[in-house]
Length: 322
Ligand code: SF4
Image 1 (cartoon, rainbow, N blue to C red):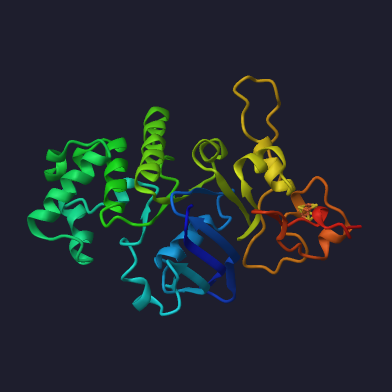
Image 2 (image 1 turned 180 degrees about the vertical axis):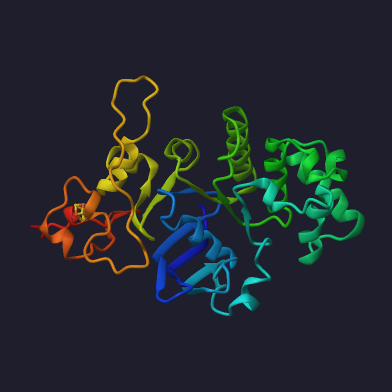
């Protein structure tokens, strides 16, 4: 049976704005991740997905105020700030960024950059680290000899593979992948998705895959959370979210997927998400919701558990709704 490796409880992220005021970018996010599980975090740009996972890595700028708990293997790694985060970052919880080129130092060989986290965390040093770097490249389908090459000598797809190898250098339990296929062509995208699937199956790696691309999540993940305006508005098994969405935003997101058979119309979601530097009264989705009613404009819906591991934040699920 899979074990829980990560639990995020009531995670909030605030940013101080340059002039005055604060932006509430992540609002009470709760997540649970089991070993070997592939979990999707989905939503439009600006809904807080990337901010949430950067908070899990402790990589937000100092202007961010983060609260809540990030429990990794039973320890709250947020409680002691940077002192308690540092021993776990890249070792137990690791990340693949959107643009692989940005993940690498252009003046260091790829091999040297694979070795660095291993040496920092005392996982391997010297020849052992060099050998491990070659093995990591092999694991992601790159010839080990290429360890001596510089990032610009790699193609886009190969760089993304190397970025995955770097994230795996210390054998993490949790891998956070932030839109890792967005900049790649369709063929390379499919190869990277296959690679991530294989790695999570073979290594028992828990994967959080962040994207606005629902078909990608549907292919890769067994469970997902839908984020809107900084909060999770629905979470459940992919099957459930697809066939029985209980939040209008989830239904509309899935409705916006192009149908390859051309049998159903693609319906886009009107309007734009709300600004998070202003106070929101009622349901944040109300101005765009096609079934909003009076209560939605005055009362914010809470995330309610509808069935085991299926929750949604919509007044329509509340039997007392009027
Ligand atoms: Fe729509 Fe109301 Fe549900 Fe919000 S609470 S998603 S406005 S029906």
